[in-house]
View 1 (tube, rainbow, N blue to C red):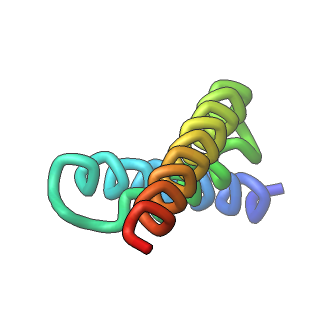
View 2 (cartoon, rainbow, N blue to C red; view 1 turned 180 degrees about the vertical axis):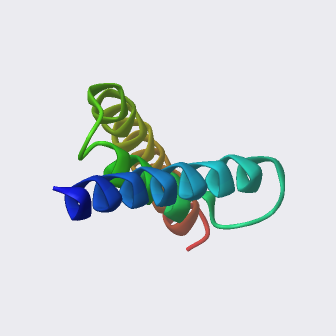
Length: 80
């Protein structure tokens, strides 16, 4: 029972640290796209609000990827 509490506390702590690093990397140059979803994924194991934010984060990243693909294709075919 005590080991389970320690494990849950450790997952929560690491999740919050990864989210905090991701938020810092949004303001500073860095790989926020790696740290935010990873931290939210860990936190979503224990918290429902983290599941909601993880889904939002995934949705935003998917939209951004689609937009970048469209921009890249326009650029690629325009410069032929």
